[in-house]
Amino acid sequence: MDVLISKYNENPISYFSGVRKLFVDDLPANPQGRLLEIGCGTGETAAYAMATGKCGWCAGIELCHTHAVEASNYLNDVQIGDVGKIDLPYPKEHFDVMIMSEIIEHLIDPWATLTKLRLLLKVGALVVAGSPNVAHRSVLRMLLQGRWDYTSEGIMDQTHLRWFTPATYKELFEDSGFEVIWCGPAAPLAGKALWFNRLTGRRFEHLLLTQISLKAIRR
Image (cartoon, rainbow, N blue to C red; front, side, top):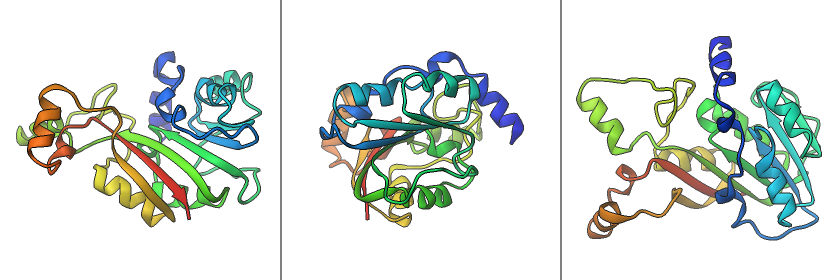
């Protein structure tokens, strides 16, 4: 595990920085709300949420110490460590929104971690999450060649511990006490992929998307 953490920390700064507007722009305005971002990196996404009135108070959890310190310049509170292991100082039913961008796949036990985090959310709190899709056709081509090759980024990132399809990603959240209201492509399909998806009645959509996007409500 220490080796994986070391590799994670060696990722370029672009891995930890930048605003993930996809996760923020569709959030309802809530200037008094509290937001929790898991894997907050250097803090730009949560800071953007606060700047655009999606929340009035932000907390983040980040594994990499260097980037967590940077995030503390923007967020109201930052906890450093593995979210699945550390004790969090927040009371139950404290947050209105939780963001988890490309985090689930790095966790040893996503089910236990989501169950733990669920207690920190208000009933009806919104969760937005995203992870790579292991059912993408590029992975199937690799398997047909008898390979399972890790890469430095993308679906087969060497720091990933878990892989999900859209169906099993949805089940992960449902099994952890959430009501899923959307699970599908992180970005609209275009070109041949869009037409193929329409012609096949979305039956093979799971082969077309590289990233899974999910919205859920805390039950």
